[in-house]
Length: 604
Image (tube, rainbow, N blue to C red; front, side, top):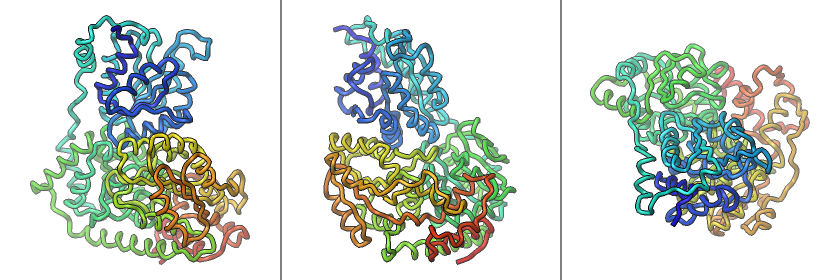
């Protein structure tokens, strides 16, 4: 039996541990896809829309902590993957994309290295395969690059002739040849300089108002146990970035809320008044206000634990930079604390109690507003009701603008691997394909997608893919007929001069039913819980389309708007008395939030 290059590629991917592949049977990489599909334990699927594939691979890679593969046989496949690749780059998710290189410049092919040029900004590393015998070696190099240091997407560009080439190997020697080419896929992590770790511990203890912040690097290192244990040992207030959600547990007595802006006034109070911040695996991007004023104290002394030297002091000056893997550094810190190198500072208790009081005060106001008596369903009430009716251990995929903030406030368990929002680029439309990738990794775990109406329309066709795969999950659509994050900012800051922010009245439940799935529309608050429970029992992908108030927006939208509209002349007084805005308790609450976070006040 002759072994072709595409068979050798499939063997190399399988022996390297790949168990999730997106592609199709036709075209240049089709034989490799078909080969993988026949292998035990491999899920190989073809999305209905090419743009979804990279997001499915993202979801599976995130959940399994191991690369999934996108096979892009044509330039169109590659271009359609860019949104998902960019999102994976932003969130440091090490998905693989394999493209096919054709030398001819006609026949719908791109010349030369064009695909590598397109993908280079989104990939940590890119390799070429020009001979079939090189396939195992280059695949192995790619896997080592994917997991070494700061994670990120990997690109392999394979010559079409290499896949067609016959490899002169007897069948009994193929496995040995591939394993030798792949090489050792495990490597030693950087543990961090003990001198710098001691310096960081001394700086934290001497601080008056210290803060610990866990980022996505803690998730990628699977170091949430070490992170949570260190917070308890240091007895210092802690929060997380959006990407680090779940790395400090919700029952931790030193957890002040989060993640990021979703934590509301306690997060803002912490970063406004902190004098020392230790950021672990967090480079402080836009969702954290870049670690700079107006939200952050400009005099903070930063400690950064980072595996990638290029990300040290990326957005803020750093006084102590500990280069190392988050799990290794945190474990070493814990050892030092247990050995007596650090004693909790009793003065930090006053600072902690203040932050917990701010959190309690803010949560009481938010919870009090999110009731079912508003004329149109309140988004907070919807999110809270869904959470209250979920089975234990439900995983939440969050996709949208304001919807992400509502879900963040009311649905987070603050436990490892309990919720996912693509934080790096906030990519709309990722929810359904992410859910497919995660459910493929863990079919039995309950999963709910909390999704805005605009984002739902991006990849609604993948409901069919999920149905054909026999996957069960529920999508809750926050149907306000608008791009509400944009509309809310237009109402607040630009006198309700709206442009491009209205979607109109669309029945998304009918769309779901038309695609062969469960769909129910809800317009009354009292019907939310029974409709959701019915969707849970329906089996397959199910859509609950809930009509919510288009003139309602979360308080913490103001936090995002201040950063996003930096430098734009804004007159908040325009928002007062606008006929298009509802003047009620919600507007008063938002005014209190703005004054509290921008002026550091304590309005109840």
